Length: 260
Ligand SMILES: NC(=O)c1ccc[n+]([C@@H]2O[C@H](COP(=O)([O-])OP(=O)(O)OC[C@H]3O[C@@H](n4cnc5c(N)ncnc54)[C@H](OP(=O)(O)O)[C@@H]3O)[C@@H](O)[C@H]2O)c1
Image (cartoon, rainbow, N blue to C red; front, side):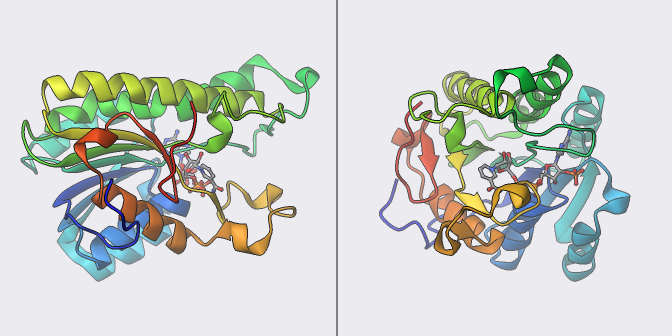
């Protein structure tokens, strides 16, 4: 990876952002468009009709933004979106999956102890956090160019590091991100067979001020809580400075390697 994490080196002409309705995903879409790192952005989200942030960007950027319905737990929606894309583009230089789940209104909260664990919540966490990015790669990696700089990035989390786990708890989120990391590492090996220059990475964005972290922000010092804009600026600095040797790495917002 190049030395600067803040200054984009490369452009990514056509990008796909999945989980783009809010939080970091929406911020990636906005920043890719406003900086012109990408000329065209495809944004996948569960419910385009309710994605007001994307609708506002659509008014600003017109045909440079294309919103597609995608629920990473409903594989059919990914297959349909890929079919639509195949008629509208010739290649993707960035696929970034931001869809993630830590808590929800159906009673999912990170487990504090073993007795909080239940199968339904584990299934939901794995469906979004682990299987989601893998299925996105399954349906969209065919749009990566056979040669030339391109990136597959999956938003992971430091708490998914097995080696770094000193606190325990958060069984479903931690383990689903650890599984996601294994999928990303596998992808970094297999995707090179068809996209020779692809760089496939797991990224830790730091703790960011989004809906996902809201219930857990109290104990985070203000200088350790990044605005989505700052987090995305940092991560795009990393993405656009990636080099071939970075393929298969788990990288934090500051460019440091996170232990598996
Ligand atoms: N925020 C942090 O502090 C932090 C720290 C470490 C890692 N991360 C990771 O960064 C990523 C982005 O997090 P965030 O902070 O932006 O979270 P967020 O604000 O809660 O946004 C989550 C996004 O994921 C989408 N999503 C959830 N389930 C989905 C599904 N089945 N199909 C498609 N999209 C789905 C949501 O869409 P809807 O609007 O449809 O619900 C929303 O756009 C996640 O992978 C998260 O684990 C975040």
